[in-house]
Each structure stands twice: as structure tokens, then as C-alpha cells.
Amino acid sequence: MIGSSILTSVFLVRVSADLLSAASLLLATVGLLYSAWYKEITAAEAAPVEDNPEDREPARRIVRSALKNRSRPLLTAAVLLAVILLPPAIGTIVAGLRAIGADTWRYDAAATCFLAVYAITLLLLNSIRKGHRNLRAKLAELDESDAEASAR
Image 1 (spheres, rainbow, N blue to C red):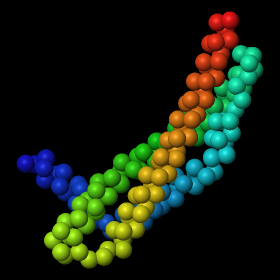
Image 2 (cartoon, rainbow, N blue to C red):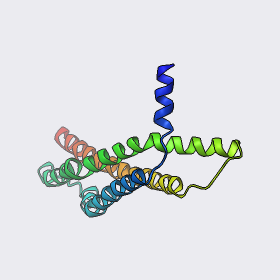
Image 3 (cartoon, rainbow, N blue to C red):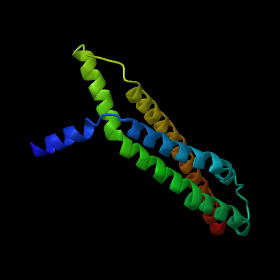
Image 4 (tube, helix red, strand yellow):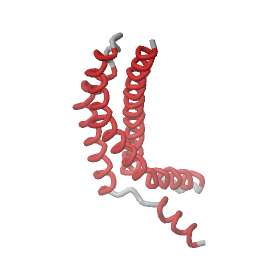
């Protein structure tokens, strides 16, 4: 019973102007970092895989650096933001569905904007996740090519 009431109180957070402002500001920060680092991340994804194993080390360093210093922090920030905003997003959706079902629905601009911010957060998270996955695949490709060359 106690767990149920805690769960209910967590998911029934009312969207305030402060929550909307904080969510928007954090999303803008992650988006700004993503746009600032995007060129470096995509350049690392496009790093060539040389035939000679000794020639692959510069590309490997570029990809590792982009993973460690750009992609991983971005992915961590986006995941944390999505997780932190999940309970109020679920609560807002549940409250809206209940209000529609009870025929007591009233438009709430703050709640609607919050859901828009959360949706954009999820879209940004997906884009960052894809870039991170591509970098990991590029590093694996560089390492795999290295293993194949040394086996010859």
C-alpha cells in the first residue's frame, strides 16, 4: 500500500512553470552541445579504414576521442534528462486521459508544452543514440580490420 501511494504521488506531478522552464533549459543545453559537437562526431563516423594496421591508429584515436569526450557525455545527459522527466510526462498523460474520460477536460498550455518538450527530448535522445551506435560500430570496424590484417 505504501509503495502504491509513493508511485501514485511520483507520477501525478503537476506541470508547473518551473518544471517546464527547467525541462526546456536542460533540453536546450543538450541540444546546443549536440549541435556544437555534431561535426566532430560525424567526422569520426566517416573516418577511413586504412588497409595498413599502422595507418589505422590515427582514425582509432579520433573515434575513441569522439566516443569518450563527445558522444558518451551527450548520451548520458540525454538519457538522464529523459529518465528525470518521465514521471511527470506519464503523470500528465494519465491525468489528461482521466480528465477526458471523466468529461472534466480543460486545456492546460503548460502541460501541453511540457509534453512537446519531452517528445523533442526523446527525438534528440534517439539521434544521439544513433550517432553513438555508429561510432561504436566504426571503432569495431577499425579493430576488426586490424585483427584481419594481423591474421594474414
